[in-house]
Image 1: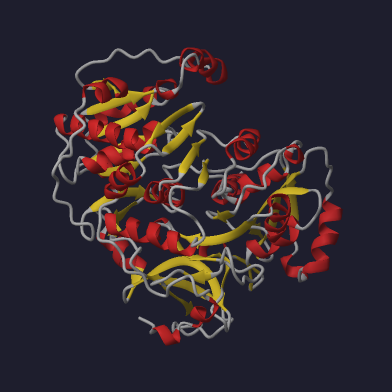
Image 2: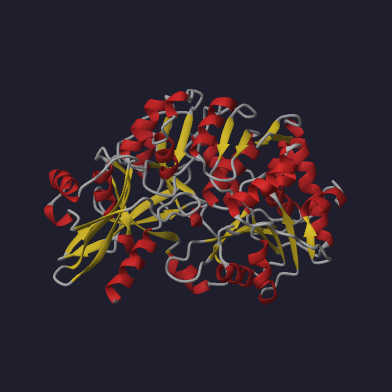
Length: 562
């Protein structure tokens, strides 16, 4: 590994951030126990009017752990969680860990095929799911190793009278009313909590070796792979996050919890960080710009981790100027490139700091980030975190690239995954001499600041030229009427590939191809200028708000087959 003196990024570290950290060899659940001990009456979360203290959350997690053990969950057994952001999501996560189990986070939007694959691949014994998704789970249960399903609803943790009214609102909004007949294998979450004993279960967990989480990747190149993250991986990344955000005060901050907890980014930077530092989480089950604006003002939120589309959604809300957002201190953006224009405008509106971070599911997830309080460079993803080594593999020589030379980013650090579940060959292919190959193309400048050019597989090769979609997207975002954009390569009989831009105009704005073409030609070489534009009302996205480029690519492939 590179020595401390060879890491140019350390010169840009403020004195408050250590170059190396003395990590605690603890389990993740220890931090919930500590928060309940040190801040017992501190509010752990606010959820649609309902609040629970840290001591109450710990007690309910213990009760769930007790009941999971009675269902046969033993150390190392996988337990799936298919929940939206809610009190149950936090209690389930820590309850599983307290029982000695491994959490398998499952996206509530998954269809039957995806649920079946993930349950079968992970060998999950038990699933905790929302009542709304239960019908999908029920259809595939017999094809999976699942022995028990535990069901809960949003209403279960709402105050009176919201808990009585909510099912009617839910049915009106979704058209779904779920009637459940409970049995010995189909159980009620709230009844289990009521029956459970709030007693610690002695489980011998080795933080460095034992898994806390199986987090499935998006499966852009085939079936999703389970990323094996140990307790230590996740503790390390949460501790790194605390050191990076050194102005934050334990027990004092209020964080907007709109990033999905079932995504590793929301899990680490919102849920695990909050529990570690006893922050108050304002839990929001579904991204709603108006609800977030109201919550920031009402609860005087100080932190709002998000994705670029979340910040864009707030900035484009017609009522944004009606809300006081000045309590915001810091925001870290992740999961997709942050347009400079969005960063600048958001900071103007809040007077807080919004910086871009970079990471992967395989890195728990954060590896690199801009400084919240310190020097940053426009367009850069920032500096590697403490104890994290990053280098660029030259596509030309296969050796470490020179400064400013584009190549594939490689990462090494204590937050890097143990490997892929049941896939030793895929694990081996993702590492080179102990370095994780990220699949992202980028470069490092002379001062150790890193820049992402694009995903290796998203690069467009047109007429022999390498074209990176992100560069074109940045230019299009600078055009006043553009709200969202995604650039892909499409087949071209002459150039092999050419550039197509999917554009979402701002509300009430009409855009023309000619105007965008003229704008791009002012800032891009002619071979990079999009040949085609398609205007849409919205772009396909993940629950985190990341634009699904692959969906657009597949749509275009289907068109060209016809």
